[in-house]
Length: 115
Length: 111
Image 1 (cartoon, rainbow over the protein chains, first blue to last red):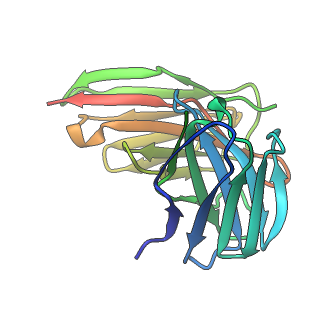
Image 2 (cartoon, one colour):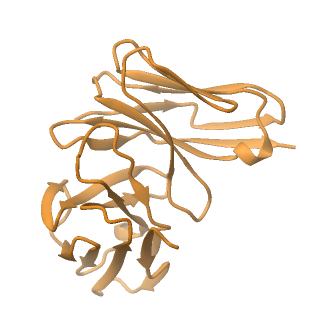
């Protein structure tokens, strides 16, 4: 019973291409997130959605566009991929209360390599 | 911008030794969480501390939140090879309790 799932697990593509990463959670959570983990393992939040509404949008190039078709899904579309986009992208979800004690549940990550 | 400094960045010890990982900031956080990440997987929450001075124990792991809620420590007693992994601290702050992560401590426990 996978709680937070991401597809694909690995993504190798050429510079300039457009790609999407999909995320689904079956925990009944209202809040979902996208994080980027660089080669030095630094994990940084990119976006957060609460019940399909964008609530956190960090300083991310507008080539990155999240889309939430429903509260169980948060997809990430990346246009015109660049070498620096190579990283591991994690999706996460949490309950909607947004309190400081909320646990975030992470997916297994998507390893993106831009050549 | 809230920043969390974790130290040490790398730690390699022998089975049975004790260790402490530190997480420091100049900012006050509503809570501080510790995650453990294994290779090829996402981070998994170990504990959340909310109250200044709070101490929580999870088997051989002891977590402490500083009195001023700016720093935290993770102490592992009698480390085992199964403790090997990347330990991440994350502070929750702001109106939406956004998590700010430290850069992690990569722990290797050798048998």
